[in-house]
Picture 1 (cartoon, rainbow, N blue to C red):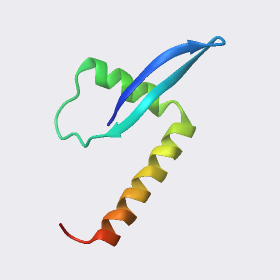
Picture 2 (cartoon, one colour):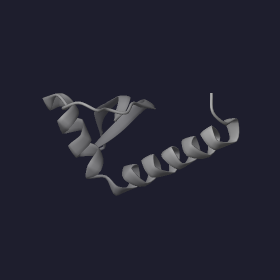
Picture 3 (cartoon, rainbow, N blue to C red):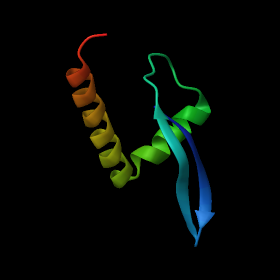
Picture 4 (cartoon, helix red, strand yellow):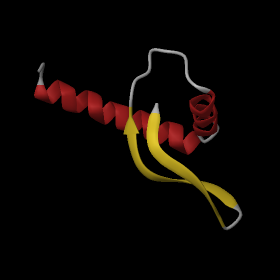
Length: 67
């Protein structure tokens, strides 16, 4: 779940801004989080960037080993 972003209107478009942090969730999401998840899912470029970020984290964890 991405956190630390907000939406602004810029030149007639809604834009996500901020520093992204990702947290895994294992519980039901509140309505605000559900809305944010829905907005993010409708942006293929963001989904691709998120997948790339997760791949980088996976490689980093493999390089660092258990700990």
